[in-house]
Every structure is written in structure tokens, then in C-alpha cells.
Length: 321
Image 1 (cartoon, helix red, strand yellow):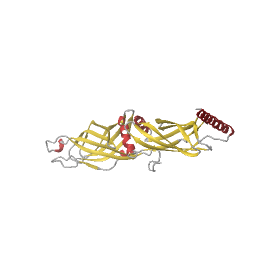
Image 2 (cartoon, rainbow, N blue to C red):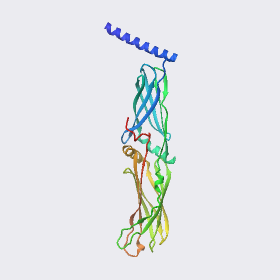
Image 3 (spheres, rainbow, N blue to C red):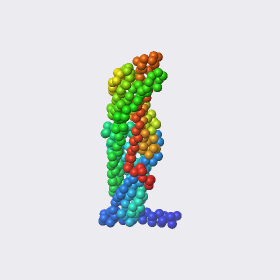
Image 4 (spheres, one colour):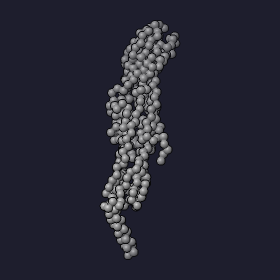
């Protein structure tokens, strides 16, 4: 027992001596606070509720000894358009002498995705990513700011809603010659966006090549993102396209923002790539065709397909560290 007490006493004295040396070194300028040389972020695993952010922080310790007695901690956060997406903290970090890498994982709550999406659309499909953090040592009584990371993320979904390609609209009915209409132009833009819904205002310019009027009584749509249903519906908006004339048919589609956290999982799993598809249909009345007994039919009107991708941290095509 006497030997154990002596060993413990010696260790206690050594800890005090080291602490005194470090404090003295700081006072005389012989020792310096660690600095953060760089930071690398990547998305890790993702599920229905959370996305893990894996971070490597490169720290330079200018002192001849490692820092592990005073408890080094790292505080870290990620924001997108000022929407706080994740906050993390790691304590008990040991930093050796010279340059070393500290790894940490931060949990991002996927329920914040709809709020970020609203800000992204309202900001013209632009997002500012901001990463901030601090490395602190209670032993040295000092801290170092992680070099702030700020980058722009943009998409162009709005631009994919416009088309000048003329396409035939076929009824595929017996005794009725196709096409019954032509779709000459498609136009679209973002409408109102709020916590629950993102609106897309659509216009379809159609031409009637027939000698009889063609009433269009209903427009329907189905919207998916990476196969995840994010919106569907129909509008009762009767427009009659007279023979040899062009009419513009309007409708509003509604994206269910509550579905966006489910979409986000597929987006991350697909290397931040999304296939957006909006399929439109129209109900047309062919009773004026003069063939008799023709009921109103639903026909494909247009399908918008657009691939968009993000590179949130600017390194998704690099090999993992």
C-alpha cells in the first residue's frame, strides 16, 4: 500500500508540474494555442429522421507536447440560409504535437428540410451554406475559431418548366383522327410558398387543328422526386379551344412540403441527385367530333422531367477521407 501511495503521489505531482509548466509557457509566450488549419465535411448515413454529417478537423498544435490533460472540446454547427440544420459537440479530444486530424459526427434533423426548402425557393433557388465552430482547451484557457466555411448552392428547377417544343395530343379513340390538339408551349414558375405547400403556376398553350371545338374540362397532375410522391391533384377549369385557334390553359400544382424530408433521404442516398417528374393530363370532350357516343376522355398533356443535383459541401466527387 505504501508503494501505491508513493506512485499516486508522484503522478499527482507530475500533473501539477505539467500544468504549471504549461501555464508558465503561456505566460511567457513559449507555448501557443492550437489553430485550426482546415475542415472537411461529408454526408454519412441517412435514415427517415436524421442525416449524419462526418467532419474531419485538421488542428495544428505548435507546442512540443500533446494536449489531453485539460480537455479539448469542439463545438460545431451547420446552417443553410440561416436555417440551423445541425449542432454538435465533442469533448475529451486529445491533440498531439504538430498537425493532427480530429473526426466527429453531427446529427442533422431531417425535419428541418421543409423549412430550408421554403427559404431556397423564396431566395430564387439559392442557398448559402455556413459552417462554424470553435476548438477550446480548458487547460490552456484558450480557444480557436474553426475557419468559417461559406458556399453557394443553386438549382434551376424553375427553368425546366418552360418548353417551346410542339407535341401532338392524341385521344386514341375509335373513329376520331389524331391528333385532336397540339401542345405548342409550356410555361411555369414558382407561386406562393409557405411551411406546408409550394405552388407551381403552369400555363399550357394548345392549338386546335380540327373543324370542331374541343372543350378541356379538367387538368390533373402527379409530381414525384426520386419516385417519392410529393404532390397530386386536379383543377376544374373548363376552356374551350375553338377550331383553328390557340388557347392558354392555366393550372396550379401544389407540392406537399411535409413530404420533403422523405425525399431528402433519397437525395442523399443518390449522391445528391434528384429526378423530378411532373406528369400532366387533360380531360377533353369529343362530342363535337360528329362520330357519336364518344365520352370525355383523359389524355396525357405533358410530362416535365428534370434532373437536379446539389454539392452541399463542395467535395462529393472526391474520395472519402
